[in-house]
Image 1 (cartoon, one colour):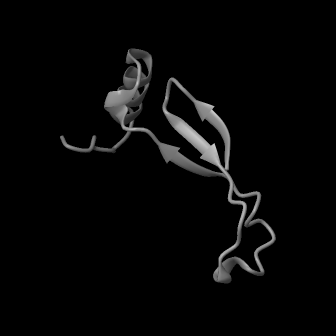
Image 2 (cartoon, rainbow, N blue to C red):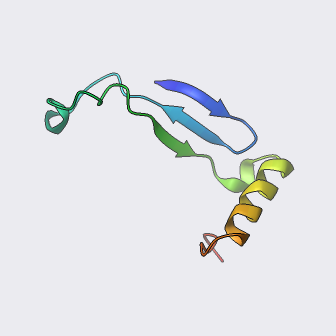
Image 3 (tube, rainbow, N blue to C red):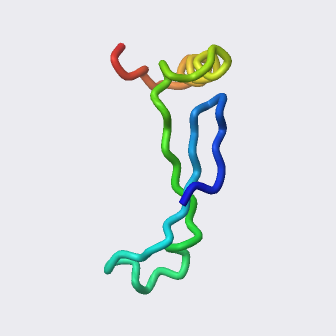
Length: 65
């Protein structure tokens, strides 16, 4: 279930509304936030620029480079 969405950076934050068998004893399973990243090419210019700057400041290589 989506809890937040950053339209510029293309990051969705979501929580689960179910538990799997391996999470049966995990008290945080239903409140833990997960992230989903939209493809960078679909973002507005401001978001694409943010991701390029982030990669430039790190040792990460952009996908498809």
